[in-house]
Image (cartoon, rainbow, N blue to C red; front, side, top):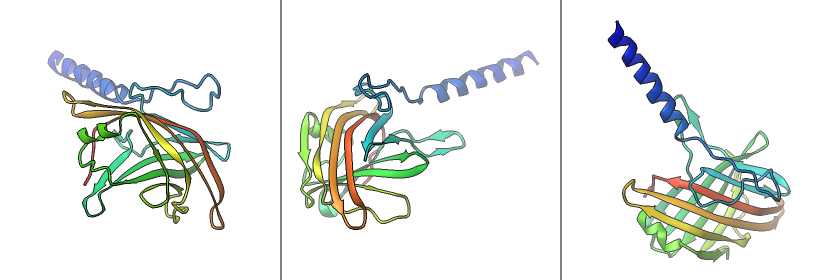
Length: 194
């Protein structure tokens, strides 16, 4: 009986550790506390102001699984990298995504090629958009940039700390005027898809 109690205690401690180890560390920005402060620690946070409304990264939660990292995918046929940040504005899901073409990034480790790189959106090779689930995306002709301020690969854990800032805007008959300002992200990423 004591052995069973010990195993149950060990199991509960293990579950609590696993759940607490993947939680978001939200530190409010000192200038605008609606946004997370910019950090480079892998705090699993992202935020921006979209037409002055808060967009905050949130990831799909299943029974015992939370996905707390952006979706990174390389397409061989077009030599393009897709980065998607899922989140919400109020109760409405929104995904902010970036398409970057011609950087030859085919693995998580090669993401370090973006370290300290500023990429301007041109609507052809480098694009940004925001869209709702099950609704067509707004056009990808946004003007703005993404700045990968810190991209560090950890070979021991086969993970990447991905931190940076972004902003873009466009005026479109379908989506209206969209201004994404003060965007920032800070994640530890483990997955890279092809």
